[in-house]
Length: 194
Image 1 (cartoon, rainbow, N blue to C red):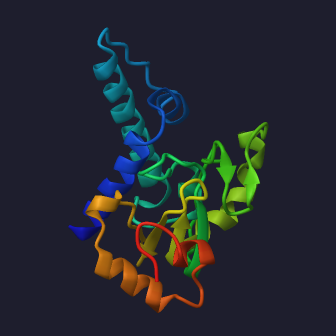
Image 2: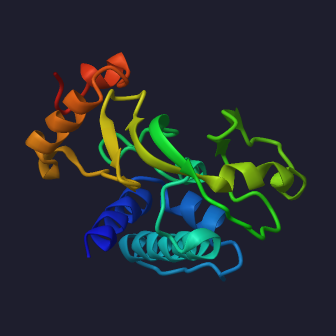
């Protein structure tokens, strides 16, 4: 149940903190566009459509149960909507994954190689994805360079909650545990710091 809770939070970050039109166009191109006369309902419907498409990608690649580098192509800061987030990996493991992809899942940035996907032929680039798909991020930190907030990745789950929903004690415990590996922006970052 806890795993489902944290993935719902990740999807909320995706669906409510990135532009709806961008999400729908990027992550649900095979689904016919939704149109509604009410702008509020139209925007909400586009977000739900995009979340469904992202969920399908998660399930197709690895059952949606692990944080991998390609997830950074869709995550944004839930507070300021900053994108892309930076990832600092503390612990990772390699899985034997045979991902059968027609094209690279990343649209905007390849976090594994640290490069932009702008102008890249995703069908040709897919041969670079097999190594990336094998890496599972166990513990690390996601950092928003725009606002200075940080979000822990604990036991393969990104804890991306808005400030008012975060657990101060758990966050400070995480920072203390990885103090020698956490970048300075997170040690002095928001919402909590050492």
